[in-house]
Image 1 (spheres, rainbow, N blue to C red):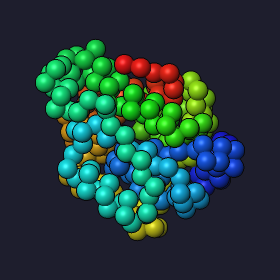
Image 2: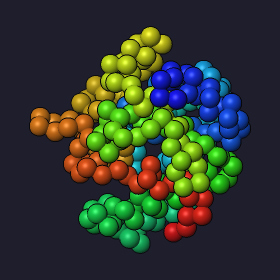
Image 3: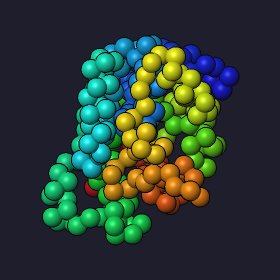
Image 4: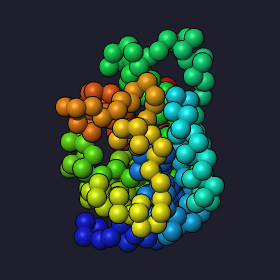
Length: 225
C-alpha cells in the first residue's frame, strides 16, 4: 500500500476488514482531515474518541461541531474511574515523573482503547499518524500488525502542506487552538504551545520525546489494569 492514495488505503482496509474496521480520533489540530477523508469512503464507520476528561474546552466544542457536521458515528470511551476520583486517590499522576505519566496513560488512554477494541469487535484500526510528526513515527509502515489488531495509516506519508491543502479544498477547520500557537493538542496538562527553539514533537509530548502509550500498547485485547 506504500504507493497507494490515502483514499485507496481506506478502501482497501474497508474491503479487507468490513464492519470490524474502526477509526480513532483525538479531535486534535488536524483531525478534520482523517474524519472527512475516511467517512467519505465509509460513512458509518465507528469513530472511537478516547476522552481523558482533561481535554481543552475548545476540544470538546470542536468535537461537538465536527460530529454534527460530518454526521459521525461517534463512540466515546473513558477511563472506568473519573478524573476527580483518580486525583483524589492517586494525585496528579502526570506530575509524578515518567512512571506516574505511564500509569496515567494506561488508565486514561490504553485501557479505554483496549475496551473499545473488545466491545466493537475491531480487527483493524485507521489512525491519522504521519511520519513528519515525530522521529518515533518516521519508520512506520502504511500497514502494521500491533499485538492483535492491524493498524492502517492512510496519511502516513502526508506533509503539513498536504494536510493544509486538503483542509482548504473541502473548507474544513483546524482546531480552534491552532490560531493561538498550538501545533498539537492533547490533554491540557501535557500540551504546550510552539515556542522558539522547540520542535513540534516536543509540544506534543510536553517537552519529552515519548509517545503517550496509546499507539504502542493498545489492541492487546487482554489488557487489564
